[in-house]
Length: 421
Image (cartoon, rainbow, N blue to C red):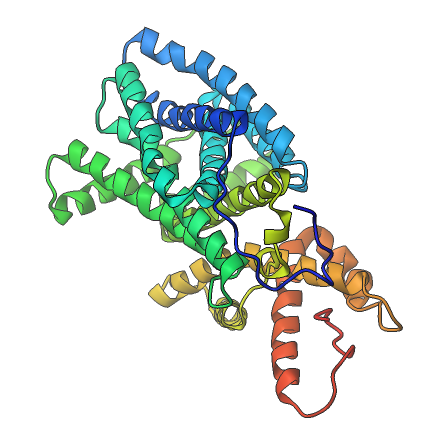
């Protein structure tokens, strides 16, 4: 397919179910098996096992990651830096954990979700019935390595998200009623999160030996206390000055550590959600690049590609931010924790949308092409330190301003100072 310019590109262009024929389809099936296997190995290798079982995954992870990265580098040249970012994240995880397995897990997860969604989206309906054979074979292979039937279920982790990404992208390209790009990302992240929660629930049921909620509550409380004791037992760093020693002793109290641990636990929903959203965004970027590489660029219309946050998200973020600013900070309330979680969840998406809004404004033609240059000049110094918050503010203010101005009677063409045009 020949790429269409934005001006002539249709609003809708359904993705045909042509399938990947020849060697490309065979290679992708093989690589999806390897990536699924890598996800299972990355999780189950941390289970107690014999030395041979623990040493084998490191070599497998290195070989599999090399093959997957070479494939991604070849077919995702238009992913605008996604693959280098994944490589950077993998290097960081390897250096931090002294193991290739976490990096292999990340690589396998992104590859399976993105390339698996590509295969699901393009395959004729009759041939998708064979796709479950990939995680089934991967399950058997991981089971031979780990001898743990419960932990081996981790090979299923990426596949529901791959189906969600494929279905969401097809609906977005084929129907005006389908989800936009952010909606597809949220659906993919939701599928990934629910699958992870289900697998974790099965593992906890095995570990606790009972489905009673009281046992889980007791285990979580014990974990919280263990974390507090562990942090409180940390010795004071050596070589500190008298002032730093006094400050450390003042901060290193049981009450302060308990408040810190409790705050982290309260923010766990937001942290987990953001991680799932970031992974889903990376997978979608790789999927779009792969669609271009295999000749389906015409299906990636502006409706599929545009990253636009909803007005509701902007309003919720504004309310959450105001709630945090007005909070006295003396007590940790339920509503305060909810506001902090909503703020953290919405911040990355709104910051990206704000950056894109500013970019569009700076590249506009005409006498008002300066657009959001005001923000770059006046707030440039702040952007160095508070870029996510400033960019999110640009999106929130710009989106609300555009929504309000569109309801008024005056002609606002080209008059939006927030770069919406």
